[in-house]
Structure formats: C-alpha cells, structure tokens
Length: 77
Image 1 (cartoon, rainbow, N blue to C red):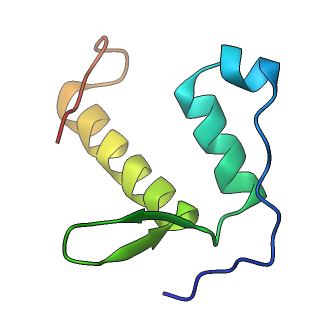
Image 2 (cartoon, one colour):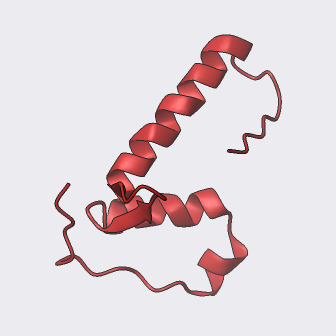
C-alpha cells in the first residue's frame, strides 16, 4: 500500500466532536482516503479507504445473517 500524504487531513470542529464516530470516520474517508489509518501488531498498514471497505464488508455480512432492521449490533475484536 502506498500512503498518500499529499491530501490535507481535516481538523475536527465543534459539530464533528458533537457528532458520531461514524460521521467523523466517513468525513476522513472522503477527505483523505489514502492516508494511513491503522497499523496492526504485525506491521500491516491500512489506509482509510481500506478500513472503510473492510467495515462495509463486515456490515454487509451482519445484515445478510441477521436481516435488515434486526436491531442494534455491537462488534468487538
């Protein structure tokens, strides 16, 4: 993965801080998709676009298994 650090990373403002985590994450994906988001214990590096794709894949699997509108789901890893 090549990390794109040429895009500016948005600063958080009061509405961001008052909003949801998913809202802030979605804003980061849109503003800086190629920026480094995570490094795991083995050194694997993921940018915001890759984390977003993985998150959407997990969400789609949950909906496939439980059905749309099945209620709140929490996932801890």
